[in-house]
Image (cartoon, rainbow, N blue to C red; front, top):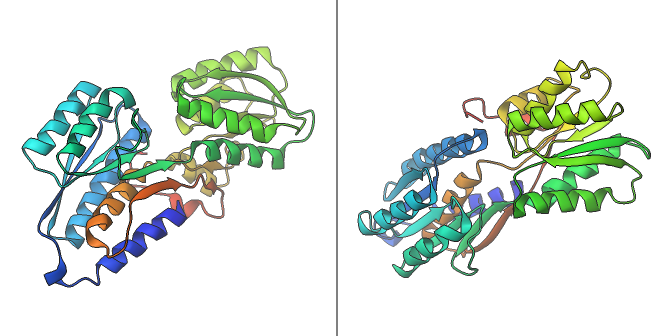
Length: 317
């Protein structure tokens, strides 16, 4: 995350040196993303709104039009409106789903707009000019690297996975590859759908079947909340077990800042990536250097030493 944000910040800083005479005409940028249905998406929505205020204050000639949509069909319709009504110069889009949004985004591209795709790639490569996303394999790898510092050969872990998707596969496969040869036993892994209620139920099942668990990889902070609830209900939250989640939920980060031994660390998958995408897209118009390309944010290990840098108390996530 830090490396990419520095790149975009440098581009924006360079843009501030441009004279008014050299500035382009008014710029309209559409920002399209799913209506928040879970905590991470609510955080993304908050960061998008904060970025809108900040960028429009910094660049009075830039208009950011934010639209969230409850399903793929609504998002496709919203993209049409951004072109026909708002006549956008650029689009920042986090697709609700990849396949049904590919052609609608391609149509926006054909209108001449610059395209920035966030997080969920399109099913056809090459449509986007800029791509901004979290690093899913690194999230799995960093989680496993931390676990290996805490576990020894013969220790036991369980894994709660997300929704059966490419993203989940990338995280899981990288985790397992990193753990290979460690001697740590993976007792079982099940999908918990990035959902705290499913996390609770899956962990209840694991606890009923496995009397000796040393650590839990929950992959996601919502899942981790369900895992912790199950541990506390079963009275197993004080036996030295620890849980590693992911994403950067504010409650989790606050617990890390406070020295919680049950969830000692977290791995970043920032909802603020939508703001980074907006920064980079504006920089494409304002910078005197190239900004097109792929921006993959690092999966930073959040510890008590650096947690404060990732704590946004006003965010819903």
